[in-house]
Length: 317
Image (cartoon, rainbow, N blue to C red):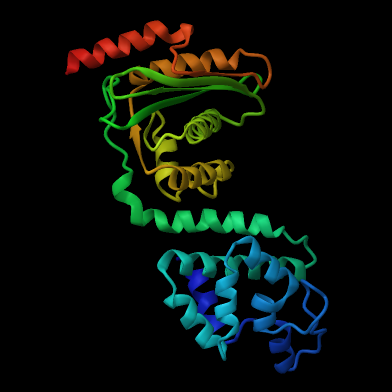
């Protein structure tokens, strides 16, 4: 975990977080009522476990049993020891949940609006996915760019994605094509996008559209293939999470890690991504917000390109 969360956990175990009763004990004259519920004095136990909002958060996260375990602890140190004794995924999630609750409390304490319990749980799930992705590196990789389109391994589906950006009016399109180990198309889609900032923005939306389609259909083993090395880096690391469109990268990673048995990310040359490129180009010229999907069919506008890819793949074999 990031050092800021480790430090938070250390301060929690030593009961040195600046909750209002702790500040009062240090001689600071202030109102000790909890800023979240405005009902009872705020100490560590109240802020994280007994506050009305904290209870709602633990329920929303479906971790009420963990809250019960922590309530039975005699002091802060024992509470942290209990957290660290849980199964790894549960421990990490609950620690991040408490960290995000503390951030929400600080925001309210500073006069800002409190996020909803559902929003905090959602952001916590994304954080845990990001922190855990290093444990899953064998299931995803960036490989050297392919010179031509190739069939995916048996049981995998390859999803080629691409985005189109029209700088003159900040619009564009997205497109994707899903093919199996035989090279047959099992799904495709395209659509129009407006209010784009750049080409990477279009690429990231194309990626999300493809992942959402694969999730809805129920694919299990997938390969995402893109001609954007920047997008591939964003999907397999945290390097671009703080970028202007970082929220799109985080959402894509969350869906990849939670929706599929296994996924891989391949980088390919533009020549290998022709089908997705044609779809994205056509999508850019659809009516505003227009979309189109195909299931188990080859879109007419790319049938010749699909056939060319299949022939090239067969010649390699």
